[in-house]
Length: 216
Ligand code: AP5
Image (cartoon, rainbow, N blue to C red; front, side, top):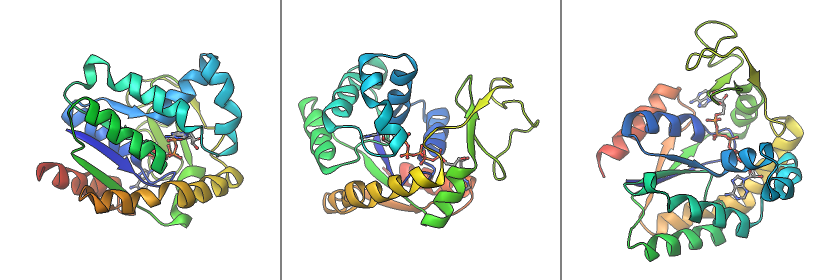
């Protein structure tokens, strides 16, 4: 199964991708996570993209296409993968087609998560994650079972993303509507698009996604 999770910042792509990983054992290929890891490791790419991520703009197509292309060649992607946050432009979408065609494989489905802007800002403003394992939480909607202790790994250290603030979020949304939302039409025309109500509670969103995956 090869699927794309498509949606604006804060729509729940990472949250739902994690659940698909747990249930279906597919690797999650999040370009945002890969870029943040490069920044943390201070690689050449990391140094080049840090300011771009902090500003809420998009990293150049060449860089992300190269990262994904290398990643999907890894053995753990042989039986499928979840693309989370990629493709994000029409150039990236065409590159994805070409990458998959070169391997003789096809996309299974593109799942669009629909959430309104007010809710996106609310979600992103309250988001934090475990500094150790990356599990994502929210100040009001999704707290750890024991306050201050990660449910998954027990760490007591948490962090917030530098781009999760109202000002940068305005920029990220603008970029989404301009550069990424055209992909909805792109994949609809290819008969690959399925949309879910991302405004629903997390478990309800998961059920909608599972119903789509069960139909493939
Ligand atoms: P990236 O890391 O991909 O960020 P994003 O797309 O902006 O998405 P987010 O991670 O913010 O949100 P999400 O949809 O995963 O939501 P989450 O599940 O965390 O990209 C960051 C940057 O990297 C970009 O701005 C760009 O600079 C660069 N980049 C990345 N990919 C690129 C590419 N392909 N090309 C160029 N540049 C690229 O949920 C959000 C919050 O809401 C959480 O707190 C969660 O607990 C909560 N929540 C989730 N679901 C629900 C629900 N149903 N109800 C209530 N709360 C919920």
